[in-house]
Image (tube, rainbow, N blue to C red):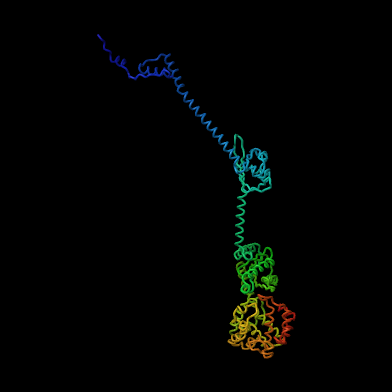
Length: 589
C-alpha cells in the first residue's frame, strides 16, 4: 500500500520554479559560474566550505574578467585624449610659429630675468634692416625701442607690476638712418616653466604721417578761417579773439595796450577811377606797410573794406596822441604806381587810437572809441583851431548857418582828399587878411565866407567833382555854376549878406578871364580876391587820388608867376610873406 506523503514533504519535494534550460556556450569564461548559479536556483542546498571557497574564487575571477575590458577601454580613452592634446599642442605651436614668422608686426621674445632678446621674427629684421641674429642678446634700449638703460629698467618694473606696458609713437631709427614711428606693447607670461616677455612692435609711421597731415590741414583751415584772403592779415573775427586775449593778459599784468582803427582816404573813389584790381593792390600795399611799421608782436588786421585795425600791447604810459602822431609819420609818403603809368598816386590814411584801460576797462568799448576817434579825424576833427571858433561864433549869431555848414561838410566829404579844404581856405584867407591889416569885422566875414565858399558844389555830380583827368566843356560848364548856386543858397539865410560877394566871385581872375562874371582887377571884391589865392594854394598842395600834392615852394612859385594875370599881386605877396614866417610855416605844415 502506497504511503501518502505528508504536507511538509509535499512542500519540500515540490519544484520551486521551472527555469528554461539554458545552453551555455562551451567557450564562455563564465560558464562554470553560470552553471553553478543555475544549479543553486533549481536545487537549493547548502554548500560545503570547499564549494563556497571555490564559488568565491570563481566570483572574483569573474569580476576581474568583467572589469578587465572596461579598464582597457578607459586606458585606451585616456591615451586618446593625451594624444589629442599633444596633437593640439603641436598644431598650436605650428600655428604660433607660422604667425611669428609671417606676422606684419615685429615680435621680440625676451628673457624676463635678464631683459635680453632671445628671438626676433623676420618682420622685425625687415623693419629695422638688421639680420635676425643681431637682435639676440641685446636689450631693448640698445636697438632704440627705449631711450636708455634707465628707461628700460623702469619699463621692466612697470611690466612686472602690471603685466603689460604700452607705448605709442616711439621713434626708431633703421640701419639706413630712416625714422620710423612704432606702437610698442609688451606682455609678461610663463612658458614651459620660464617667465618670458613678448614685445609686439607695430609700424605706425604712415598712420602718424596721415594724422600729422590731417592735423596740419586742420590748422591750415583754422588759419585760413582767421585770415583775410586778399592781404593775409588777420580778419575781423580773429582780431576780436586777439583783443579779448590781450585784455585778459593786460588785466592780469596790469599793463596797457592801444587799439588803433585806420582807413584809406578816398578809396571808394580810387576803385571807381582805377578799378577794383588796382584797389586790391593798394590794400595789399597798405597791409605790407602796416606790418613794416608795427612791432613783431603787434596785431595787424584787415577789419573790412578799406578799414584796418591794430592792437599794440605794452604801450606803457605813451599818450594816445603820440601813438597817432607816430603812425601818421610812419605812413606818410605812401605812393602807388598803377600799372605802367609814370604818375604815382598818393595813398593817405585816417586813423584814431584809444587806450586800455585809460579809455575803458572794457576792451570792446576801447575799440568803439578808437572808431569814433577815426571818424572824428576823417571829418577834420584832427585839426583844432580857428575854424571851430569861427563856427561857434557864427552859429551863436546867425540862425540857419548850421544848415549851410552841414551842406559844406557834405560837399567836402564827397572827396576825403579834400575833406579839410574849406577849413584850409579859411585859415589861409585869414592869414592874408591879417597881413593886409583888415579889421575884426572883415576877418569874421572872410572866415565865414571861406567856410561856405564851395557850398554850391552840392549840386554838381560826384563824377565831375572827382574826375581825375581834364574836364570836357560840358563838365566845366557844370563846375562853373557852383558860385552862383552857392550864392543862392547862402542868400536864403539872414545875417550872411556880407559873405555873398566872396562866395559869388572867388573864381574871378585878375585879368578878367574868370567866372561867373568875368570881373577885372579891383572890380572883384577884396574878400573874393584874397580867397582866390587861398583856394588855389590849398588845391595845389592837397593830395589827390590821381596825384601827390605839390611841395610848398613849387606852389608858391606858381602863385608868384600868376600874380598880375590870374591873381591879385598884392594878395599873393601878402600870402607869401605871411606863410613864410616861422609860426605860419608851422601851421601850414
